[in-house]
Length: 119
Ligand SMILES: [Zn+2]
Image (cartoon, rainbow, N blue to C red; front, side, top):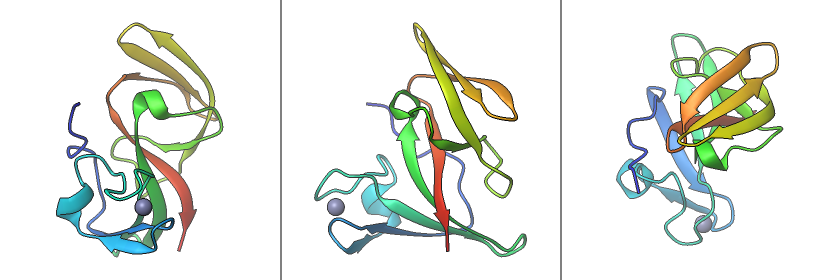
């Protein structure tokens, strides 16, 4: 499986699994962004001081993204997220239709920042 370590990130990030009520270090989770104990998505509390951004994320492989998810575009973590309206699969690529943005094309194994909240 491809490593998801190359995803774009904010300067300060904390990682926590709510199922296990446990915090993890960067090293423990940065290849998968899933909990080593229960396999669920790890919640990422990400902060950028310069833009006063404090957001909560999970990180998915593109083929795990679902209709209704809120997606941050690459390089757009301090900007708005876009709701997934539709997903079409073209072999090794996905075509993700985003509300107020249009179609975003990605590889099946591309890591995606999904917005789940703020803090
Ligand atoms: Zn867990």
